[in-house]
Image (cartoon, rainbow, N blue to C red):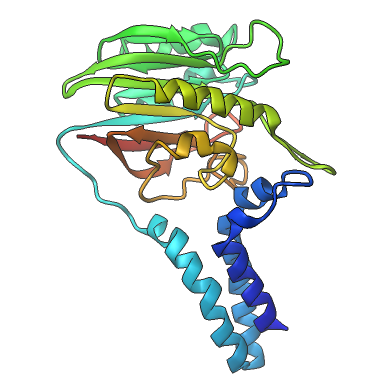
Length: 301
């Protein structure tokens, strides 16, 4: 029994792309929590040890090996690169945040070059602009997303990632060129539509459509390197983000589960890059949001 379950878990880990996405987008739902399959493996290992089942222990080598191969690198501390690089912070600040000034101060303490924020709404927006102004004199806001930079920016423009069927005025994408000490960098900030888990499974069609639109915009970008920061409402293993992960590098180490802040289960706040390397990604302490901020160093060139 234990050996059979171990083989099934190994198959799920190794061939999750083969799990059909219907009904209810079960494939994406599985991929959203794929690292947690390791917890089931640990439970089986304890049971196998208690029962002294040699067959089960041998069978468990399969899921253990696949889990380590898939996620083991994320457990490494990561090397702090020096020289050409930017420290970036990504945070969905929540439109219900009751302490925007305190949230801003917490983000400033990270000492980042770039800060990307989502769910910027009035009247909190004014508080963020005021609190961040001294440390980040350059910023751009489009709709409910914004980018703050220590370095000059230009080429600010809206990135249209609005899926069909959403009302006019919905604006969650922005692009700018950051004139860093190491050369120009294209910076994108995006907030993909939310997904919902219900009796019918995972409702994520609009996120799929928005990710495809963002992927097209990034594919057409001529400035290199490129950094994408955002609440993508999906983990990097989720096939729904393939329009992005197929052309961008993700963090080399760190799980950095960012949502929900009270008991983080997944990292849906992402830092990705092209012609650059995202090093170790980690979370910052909780703010007034239901997300945790994430911070990473992006090595350029």
